Image (cartoon, rainbow, N blue to C red; front, side, top):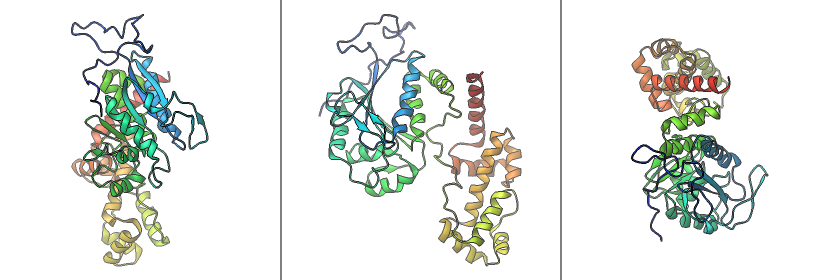
Length: 362
């Protein structure tokens, strides 16, 4: 197996020690023998029949848009066998050739597909990633592409994520992988994994920021009118939306009432009285039908309500009172557990993204 490419190679857009643009930035920059600009960073995406189109298109647009603002990403799409493939949406996709012919790769990226979590993964696809990864500066997966990396042995002992619906399957199939089920994306050394579909855009922005800094990444997000650039640790989904719908009408009516007025008094005793059952029986119903406790369910609904109020500009203290948490500290703890960031940090990111979106559309 070849030694991994030297990580001190200068990325596109870097500057010299004296603060002058490197040769890769100057007009008329020299080109290598393969015709690519000096200091270009090649991103090689590996696709296969049935891959998820947005897993490719989302990150691709981020890298391509970055080139408008000074980056030098060279983008190529390859398949294990070198033949064109068809996405799960039925769109034929041409490729540059087989993975085995990839050269000078900065980022190796494998996309996901609906069949990956439940069907045997093609051995040629696994071999392709096992060959390509050590020849790249870094390796990334989008959505269920993490199953390919895990099958290739690349995630053993590493932290990783995938689409939340497939996270438990990944953890069971590969117990040596430390699965972070609800992260947007995870960076562990030179390996990067992202959650489902649109989270690939968040990962691509993070890679651009790593290569070129936060300012360029923000400029790209603004240009693409991305409303909220999410950090990797932010949860993939709304806490209450992650819960199943109650099966019985009485429990559905109770949960609907909580959602309609999150700030009301929703203790276990009060909920049980409304449902005309004992507190113990209500707890059993919640566990059997929702997989959680009444208190945890109420907390998740209140966190969702807090998200909406913070987005509307309500203060953290006022939000805590209105949704039933009582104090900003109680809201902060629940918000961190449910969303992955503090209420104040979430609100500031939302305000920044809203300003950028407004600027991009005027």
